[in-house]
Image 1 (cartoon, rainbow, N blue to C red):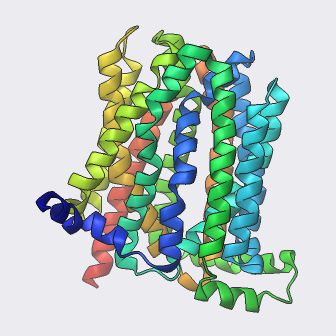
Image 2 (image 1 turned 30 degrees about the vertical axis):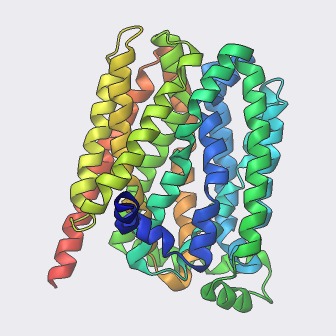
Length: 421
């Protein structure tokens, strides 16, 4: 009984049980997306290699996806305002995830992956609409805990990750990946339908639907220059945008080339990869429960700078590893996990609180477009670097993490000056 009472008193548990309305619908259904995604994503690039794709082709696919995301992100604010947060999330979640997981499950060659990347690019619409659905009726003080639970939901795959490795050993990589993609199709589609049943349109969503009701989709875009000027006059938003960019490019590098450097340079079998996401997720969950509640009273720059330091150290270890360095690779992965838990939820909160709530959808749309435009060439760049030497993309990641740390420091200085006025 005392253990149960202790758990119930934990700040994160209290925040989870206290969720209501859209926050509850969004957070409670998130594992149905996060678990299957985190099961297949560590093997996605190795799966492509199994069909004869080269490093450069894998990077090209990532860049093609980002190019199409420019257009979907640009339209995401207008679509979210016109259709409403709830309807846009349902329609574009199904298009962005249910359809591509089926294509990946039955992929045969390079063109299947290109088609899936193009269709998957519309997830930029749901990134906007789902964020608005989650936060617009929420208390700003609850945002860090809410985003922590979103991360925890995804990391719940920790309990299932070893199964993927076992299945790869038993059935080989390609059949196992086809099964994981089919599982993702089923679970994600259930998630989208259940979320739509229990969510309601936020108050700001109702206002924006009414205001844009008699406007065409493209006429809604006419207000974007004014919104862009608003962003350019808001230093806090600009610093946040820069940190988003550094994390976006590093995420692209990690998701597409980490498995390649581990299997091709370190010669660690693909079947052993599952252990590392397992360890990473386990540490992230421990961090969220044991450390993150204690960070809430700290200025945001302290955990974020520490997180970027962990990212840098993780990359330094990774690029220096000799073959079969299982233990040191684990250290690198665990440092990355600490970095993600320290930076991720706080950056998500910064994205929400540094924008004008009345124009949230369109501001987020423009911010996402800027991030995508500047990130899109790096799939090809990282692929080309990897074809020269598999460690080069991760040297690039080091520079970007250092940029993220610098921008965090600048954002903190600006915040301190603003508070003193």
